[in-house]
Length: 203
Image (cartoon, rainbow, N blue to C red; front, side, top):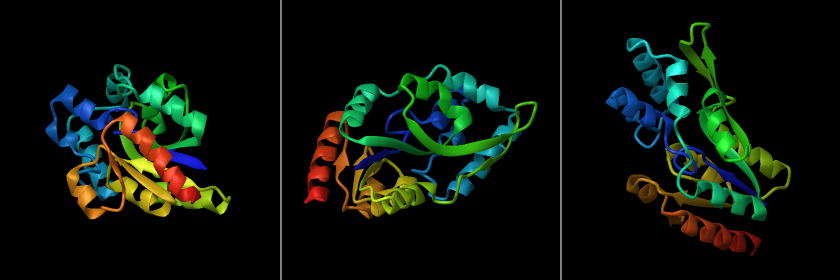
């Protein structure tokens, strides 16, 4: 049985929100909690970066000062003792490195940025559309059972696809749309939810 986790909002703070706080650009605070269409969200972000002459090194500098959420590393270590763990994220490899080091380098499937020589972010490349859901489906095709956890609209596909889904600190609007998933608010609750959902999946 595999555990698949979202990254931002579950193990680490939201990178774009941290960057918004650093730059004072409120529109960069928007995430998939606010705009379910990921392409619309990213196109808006890239335009804001261009309009303000902000480049990849500016974002990486902020990421370098960030840490995983309080208790995330201990939770992840526990989860790895009970499950094989894969992080399924819509972040980018150019962002994730320093934070993955602080989490002892869990397996991460995410996306890539297209970056010019001067550091301008020109575009982004998805591994594939709806990659989280398709990753879970591919793992199931290898006869794995999957329990997935996330916090946002872009996680709901993988939660539905998995044998078991768990919300972690989601906005209330999402839980109302997907009332079938248990809602957890801290790592102790999330740990217990994984234990309970595993028992249900095993029957």
